[in-house]
Image 1 (cartoon, rainbow, N blue to C red):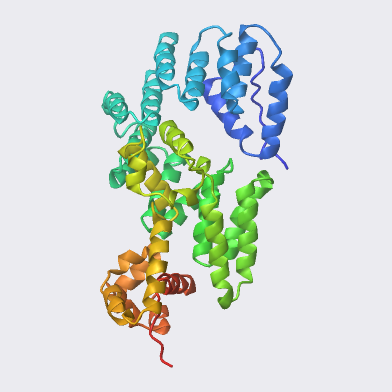
Image 2 (image 1 turned 90 degrees about the vertical axis):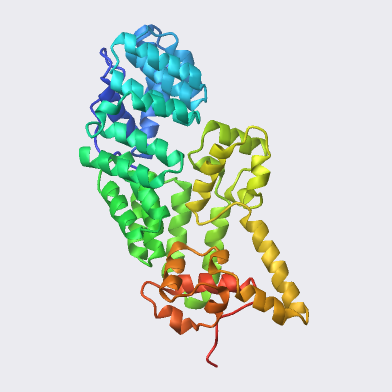
Length: 440
């Protein structure tokens, strides 16, 4: 393990670094596992120091390490100043204490904090609290920063994305990048939205822009690796994962992904099914805590004993909405998470029903009539990936009947339609007891 560069910013010097320098220090600390360990030791060496200046520096250091409960306790011993109030607000926000966070942000203005930054952080806090009206109201007061502030357009985009206004969100992310080409968070969310909408080429381009800069943006590299693997560019996917592991050698998701990529390089055609099964298992076992959800959504899911992506596939929208305090906003958040994995609520239940229907079709003499009913169903019912659906549209295939009248060769003849998409379709119709037309 090695840090990317040497950092000259000393949080515990006689004079506290500026807010921009503290942000730079935080990025440096999280740029590698070695940096994080070294900084953690530095904080521990200073944690027993007393006095208001020492409490302020240590409190901010604890925030950088994510030790939020200790942040609040430590910063409360420091003298009031903008740095104390802002980082206290950040810690309270992480802990779900949104009203207290807003109060501290507002109080920071009295200590010469930048009004624009405070208003933007208040808007973000309202958004985390799922108070979208409050966030919109706060951003409305900053309308004069339209086409001026990149961060204003980024926060506006985040709010619109949370509300399901994806096209508007993407427009604001693009404006943010025009104003600040190196705005990594805007780049990441723009790439993410392109990925979800099926524009993989644009998503790859945006993720590559992030990956070419320092510090290492782990989520961008992991997402880029997924896209490269989907297109069969395993060497490029491996390089992305290797870069993550160079600085974060114990990153569990990257370690698992590297094994998957290595096996993909030597995967024979008849082993594709097992590969997809392993990938699906990894996805289903992904903990909900890996995704950015509001505190309310996380708490509701925890009380319902929903801990993984797989758990979400075994529950329906109606069941979620029937739970106390679980509303449409939380539902949208969950659906966005699942859409990013090309999954949807109740999917496991539907697959079990389809499998049962297919078995019944096979076992009864009335199978012909049931097959005709299945043939008239739209291909959208198969819940295929974006790439597979686009290829079927090019062949003017709209129903399952249209699909099973095609051969493997016809499907593979479509541009960008590969073995992965073919196996995906074969598995989907196989679950219904159907198959593609054979020339034998």
